[in-house]
Image (cartoon, rainbow, N blue to C red; front, side, top):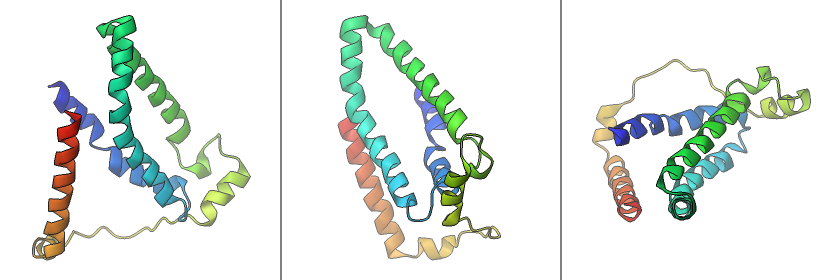
Length: 145
């Protein structure tokens, strides 16, 4: 059940990051911002076990939950204050910063269209990319568990 709840909580991370990057970063900065999130999502599971063992050894196993929980609440609070609005209406963004972001921001308002699933499912590249992604995630999960 806990793993299921973690999945629900983590599921929106990448789509939400894409929206955040679109709103808060210029076109020439979006790739670097996305790379930082992606690198962090793989770097965190490497560092967390080391920190967990240290906390466990010095403070006990219950402390692991309290400390990580507190860190999560603090990060959520900071994120709520910093990133909940568009930069053009955010109270902490000054005029110079706002102009810089808006100068080369790429928000395209388009009508929603359905994905061409028939074309995707018939494409060799679609299946090759899906297989490659499955293998990468399988290997990462194998080494993390």
